[in-house]
Length: 467
Image (cartoon, one colour):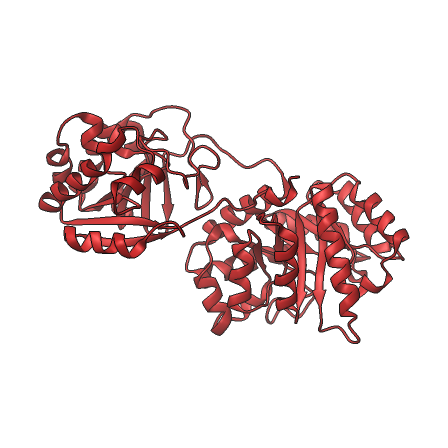
């Protein structure tokens, strides 16, 4: 199932068959449609949108004063907007923003309406559905001024800005929603932008009845969100399932809807690799880790209700030859489950499959002995998250259970692995407080590989909605 994150079901082109359009969307695999209604002096669009949200379980509403109506904003319209926003199933304030491409665009009125509505969103604790055309510099400036250091909760609908604007907005916590434009082929700026985005930063939409799919010869409608998701998957070099899973979760999180969870996830696939989620327990409390607040990776909720046996993992894996690599990871330290790790890795190796463990390097401290001889026969790579280049910074950032001796013990573990295991990599999260070059030099001194990891803050933050 996918979500159409932005459509205009109150548009006149849907007057005759809107109920059939919603049914068609559900039949096609669209779980939710966010319908945006214009808050203006006429009020017909907003009222129609609210009626559809009340009538159909699949429809939620976004209500806002659009840029083209900004000049009519007065106290009467502002009061009416607040009444509409108080109605059930209004999940977003939108689409609001700036549109300098409009004929005779009143920029001053648009900026005033946007600023007022950003403040209303905070007061009413509503996420944002933002619109922008030809005004990216002003939009970024206003959002920065109003953020007050907080991360936003919301998204840019039908994003068509530059990579620079997109990454700036994503850096503020906003998601970027892509329409049927991506089905027209991805190159140039759009390709560069998508290369810099993660799956937890994107949504799919139709902007129905606008943004028709190429060669469709008809208006766009919410059922087309499935085709948009497929096109986005191709553009981001991931699977349709990856896009569907992530964008559905992303939308639900923004809207404050229940998040899907179908029991514990023992293994999960990303592209041609299979990841083994061995444990949520860890011997570090890294300041940047989301293990306790949001243990989600690539749209998978990796929280575990209990420890599982090696046999249960092997059953979940099935034939390991389906995968290019088996990776032991999760929001925890895999070497805490050393017997299970070794048994599963041996099984994979017996079928000729490459194996890797992502570890914090505390294995020898955990077990009070050198565990590398146990790991060496069944691993092709050890990836050690070290995140600093000196003991003092390590203790402040990683906050290990074992105290000051931890950093030296991790270095010793790396050196032992280097002798016994084909590939050893140290990884470092890319935070402003981390000296990446010092860590790179440390890797060179140790004679191992180095890789920086992009810091992944929690997406769909409610910081902007808090007092």
